[in-house]
Image (cartoon, rainbow, N blue to C red; front, side):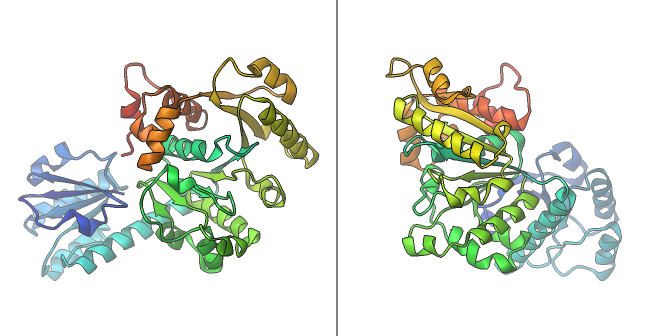
Length: 386
């Protein structure tokens, strides 16, 4: 969430109380007359009003803001509030008031707001379930995990959509290496165990927040945990995620087998990731044949080439003839940018947005985002997650 702290004078409450790992915090100083001029409503989810007199003018200003921007949660700070003032706020529909600036009070308030917004979004989107994109390497090392991370990052940034990426590359997926250096508490095994009591609020609290709109469920790092994962529970997890997110990305790694086949009905589109060489072409043809025999709609399958460069043992036309399918997108070889992103544990698009590979991934993500990019605006500007 984007939380704005608007105050008459400097507010000493530290940013850390508002969970800066999961939320964006901004501060502004000004009086109530300047509030609407300074406010950028499209960017703000929660607005704290601090240091203002608890009088009729504040009530009038809150009423005006609440009517014009009903999507913003307005939270006045009122230490030892007058009961009449609280009643006036309740009549306006203001449900949250910060009456105590202790760590626990702030945390509980933020948790309530987040849970309320999540439930509201879920109810609003219940009949508009997420697009579920699955990426599969036709051969080990073709780079599905790398592309999964950067596609998820690009979609979240360009559309401000809620995106969840799940690492299903068992037993040892490494999706998290491409996107974060943080210590992660919960993995796919944890979610599989907790699925029977899982709801939207618990899901949001357990996923790893890369940004306010991009979340991650990594695979386990231990073999024992991977073996305990129940595919039926993972299917339930995906179905729940489709209700609470706009996009769900599944990284299957090189999982061609019963595990993948059990999820085909959940997938909006399956992206096969290959490389421009003879072994990869052979594996791509075999994978397409398997999917055809399983009755998976060929219109839901696209194929992309990663680490693309000319002058190899096979050219693009020969590759497409071997697999009898057109390649949808090409991602150029850029080992320097990839190595730099892996070392930093960050999406390539976050640190090298102007690289050839970064531009190719951004162009690819536009297929699902559905926006036109205006000329003259930098990729970095477009990819900045708000």
